[in-house]
Length: 297
Image 1: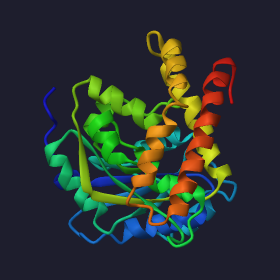
Image 2: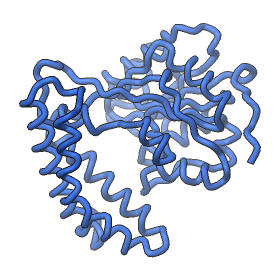
Image 3: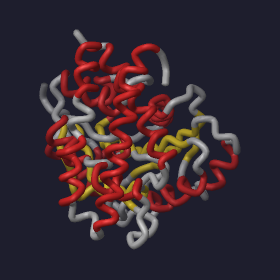
């Protein structure tokens, strides 16, 4: 399929930020987006609120006039992104998350990278509160979380925390879908239609690491359910899902070596902390892999 011509110089961009009950992070995200360094990158910011308890008026107040807030009535990050797209007007759709901190040139670099691809994923850096006092969960995330370079170049998808798509490509592929990992699902559908994904290392957002076991398991419980849903839609999907689960325990050893050698961890205690979390999480995911086949987690 022929690549649509670049249109961001004519129509501008819309930055879509789904949000639910994370007001302080949202304020910081909108400030970073509002204060982008390149004045030539014409864009709007749309916050799609998923029914936060504080209400839309409070969400809008936290945005400090830097974004337009719309209500996404159907629950789920995928539905919030779709609501943001429906309310937007830009020719390029820039997706990020409310707890991300976009770099000062994020929008401009993302738009520039589109000239070589149909849609792109940018770099996601993991941010920690105090590099000198990491929790074991933060150490694990520094090594293994948000490897968007690998996601894009080897796996063919970009995390929706840093995904940039021309509107005409998004319209051709269709909206995000609830239930499955919406970024993997959407990118797979785009590639099946012949659209090419590219990696944009200069388009950077920073995402905070999960600091506690509860935060980490909440993330992976959700992802396990979504991955299982996605596998069930494939031919022989249940068998593939079972086989995937069998690899979780043996995969601990090679990934432990990755943690031991990672330049992102400076101290041995952080390396061992990351390995402990790795082993504990893989064991839990092994149990969840088969439990989810008989009902929701």
